[in-house]
Image 1 (cartoon, rainbow, N blue to C red):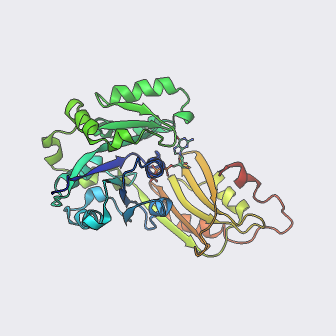
Image 2 (image 1 turned 180 degrees about the horizontal axis):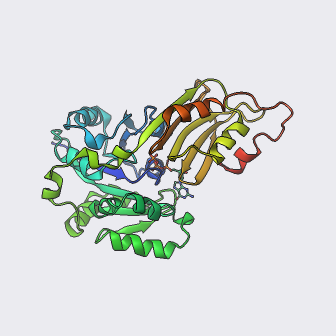
Image 3 (image 1 turned 30 degrees about the horizontal axis):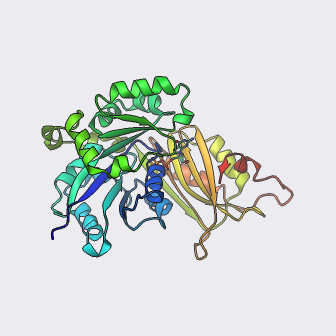
Length: 338
Ligand SMILES: Nc1nc2c(ncn2[C@@H]2O[C@H](COP(=O)(O)OP(=O)(O)OP(=O)(O)O)[C@@H](O)[C@H]2O)c(=O)[nH]1
């Protein structure tokens, strides 16, 4: 008997809004579904793929550029072909797009896909409740992204200065699209995996018309045209004091940093995932896998970055802390969860 097509759900949202957090939440609460994942990251090092690895039924990743500007659907088709092999027994595919991708381009790619085993399963737009107003000010086109979506998650509601006002604002912008406040992307997975409800929402809310999707789209207008990424990788450990000085006084233009840090500090041999989004700074501590190389890998995203300058300043953070400085990790620990 022919298998029903596998729904493909697109997670979109500006840099640092919480897409990977949502994806990890879905992977931890799969409701019995086998989830295939496509991760598309902006930097050369695919940090998002590193952050979801180990929890997925099947995953493929595509780094260094936004999928929304792929000239044809073949690149994505090849990835989807791997995930939709009958032997992988995948029930639903989730694409985490880069924080600078244009959701319209992503949806268009899916609709143009020649893979008969998939069907478009909807667009979920993640919004950072703490940063949204600043982001919108810089990139007014974000409003459209909300209207294209089937579901908007107003994430980081715990960080919003006035959550009710934000909810009202985002609901107003989203037109008929449902808006749900969340923290760390914790949403009932049934809302995303239940195809019927997604389809109903598509039929009722003001989504992309076919004309919108087919309209000529100039990639030069996409958000990522204004952003660059700088990748930094080092085997030599990082001096925590030096890194905190860097983070306190970040080079101009940086909006987002993510990756993992290997500190040289006695008693702190863990892996520290680093996230900055605007002014927000957070480390997450976890154990290195047994055979995982101890190294720092960071992606820095922003506009008007002096790439060499950023790399040079990060390189200055490498080295051992002062052996008499017992509290060298204090500031890092202050910003650490986990
Ligand atoms: N306080 C708070 N922090 C959150 C929430 N959701 C995510 N974060 C944190 O925000 C940072 C960025 O979250 P990610 O899930 O990596 O964001 P992203 O959208 O995948 O980021 P990009 O892929 O770089 O665009 C991480 O430190 C998360 O732990 C939330 O609801 N509240």
